[in-house]
Image 1: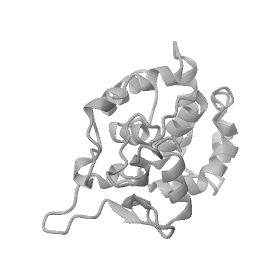
Image 2 (image 1 turned 30 degrees about the vertical axis):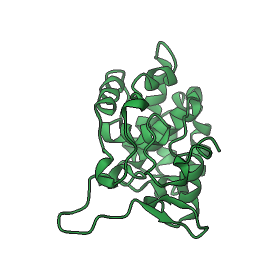
Image 3 (image 1 turned 60 degrees about the horizontal axis):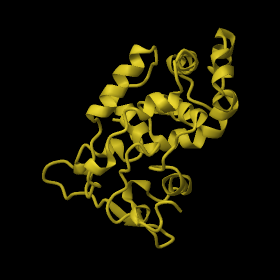
Length: 215
C-alpha cells in the first residue's frame, strides 16, 4: 500500500478498531488533516500545495512524474527528494526530459539522491515524449477528467475518501492509450487530489475555511 497523502489511508480502518481521527491539531495550534503528522515539509505541502488548483503545464508534468516515482513508497520520501528530482530532470522541462538518452538513464541509476528505479526513470522520459505528442496541452487533457465539485461531498472520515474513482480510472485509461506509464487509477486519483482537481481536505481542516481557501 502506498501512502501518497490521504489517498492510501482512505481504505478505511480495520473492523473492530477505533476509527482514526481525520483532524489533528499541529504544534502551531492549527487544525489540519491528520495524515500530515508533524513533519515540517509535509505540513508545508499540505498547507501550500495539496488540493490547490494547478493548471501550469510544467508543474502538472512534474506532479505526473513524481506520482509515478511514489508508487509503492511514501509521499514524504518523494517530497524530501524533490529538489534532486528537479535538478536531474531539468526542472521537469518536457523538451529537455524527452531528449534524455540511455546514457542519462545509466547516470541517474547511480544517483542516490533520487529513487533509482530503471522503469520509473525510463517512464519519466517516455512520458515527456508522450506529452510532446499531445494535440493540446497536458493541462487540457488532464483537467478534462476533473469531477464536478458541486456533486462531491467533503470527506469527514477516512472511509469517505476513495482511493480510486471513475474519473481517475478514465484518466488512467486515456493516458495509457497515449503511451504514458505509471499512471494507474490510484496514482491518478492521488494526482487529482494534489493538483486540486478534487479537494479532499477533511471537514474541520483549516484549508476548508472559506476565508482561507485562497490564502
